[in-house]
Image (cartoon, rainbow over all chains, first blue to last red):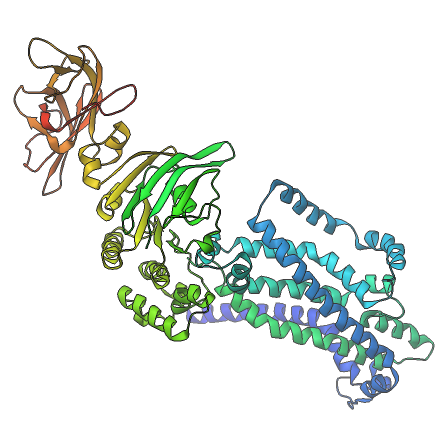
Length: 283
Length: 357
């Protein structure tokens, strides 16, 4: 009996290990290739079968530093647009979500529907008519223009997300604070904000991922002076054919582009999860 | 501490009228209970007092000062909610001191006040805990502590005991009463439980459909209900109410049931011959007779509780209850005589429900 059971559970464990291995290779394979290749010499990158043992080099990063100031500039633009749009989205969607949750009116319900509808258009349909408008008001090819685009694209989802979190805070808790002598603003700051912090963090993550990884809007609306890192990396790939860039440099650039976002998600996930577990009502 | 004056307050929600011109005076230091069935307007009235509801018309004065248009934060009133409404991200001590911190009170004063309140409520060992780490009874105490610390003009309680189990409810009821005796702060307590209202308050206000039916001391309401609603609402089991007519023969006027049974009317009841009347008598003021006395009733259920016995019977087509400290020997289907004590009979007008005697 014991023997059967243990062999049975062994088979199960082997199977689950196998499935996990496939998932890990599937998800982390490309990232691993990019990271490993960024430390390879040019001749090792495209050998088949890929070399596992090779002489690591920092040459690609050195080249990126020395010869690609345009890439670092694009990283700067990416950073500014990402932080800017995250800040703008939170700033705009917090009061909006509060109004949707606490001051419900029939008109609000209709406009909430509109919030969802806006998200259903393919982005390109919104982008093309934006081009002449942006040119007209001088926002084309500026980080500020991108911030507006990213923010307006993400505000709707952020409002709906934060509304759910604010709905989760019992109204009586607001009322208790008001009776304790707090104004609406103070109630919002001292009572509401700490309780919906996980929602704000989640909203920031969504905007950050979207803005940091966006290619389309940046390519169409800010292709020259306010180029972001993804567009720059694509441009570097184009330059390979002309012999102006190497694949090693491109891999190094993609690792540099990837690192901050990985670090950010890793840093924010713990407090976020803790918030989700402890959040909710005072009951 | 302050008196609260409520004058002709009207509140509507769309087509629904929650308060129909309610007027009430709550004396300084009084403990008033607002009691009534769901939707009677008691909670709306409470929320209007503290400013959480804007009233349509009427006037509310606290300590002689009109506050009708003031926001809640300026009324200096503390409220204990049914759900406690503690700040979940703050410790017990921070929950209690929130209002003082908002007012930028001195640290020493905050420590002193929180210490005082937690001492009264037995929360001294829990000051650093978060609400979710407390039991229901402890959370209830924190909610009261939050009110005590502020030393407000009045305490409002919105069904604060209904989330507690039966045993804890009785204990907290006693603690709230002791707290009021100790602090003497004007208190308004909303409940749908008439026992809670009777035991806690020195004045009970019975509400129904947005109106005040009657306000008075608990025993006044019990002994002299102003109408059939109050008579039926206050007291458990409820007052027996029988419909019938007055017959003035040669002797004293008598109450005649539709099936012909007759009961004596109280002395001094001045009623016209043939007038319709509702004859009310509390279960403890009826005697169950094994003889031919009184009106005939058939026993349905006998409930012995030890100290007293409840006898539920059918009289005509009405279910009546008799409450006796005698250990009654009746069994289901026995015929008994329903013999009310004429001194404790309440007579009401069947049209208006108003008290007649």
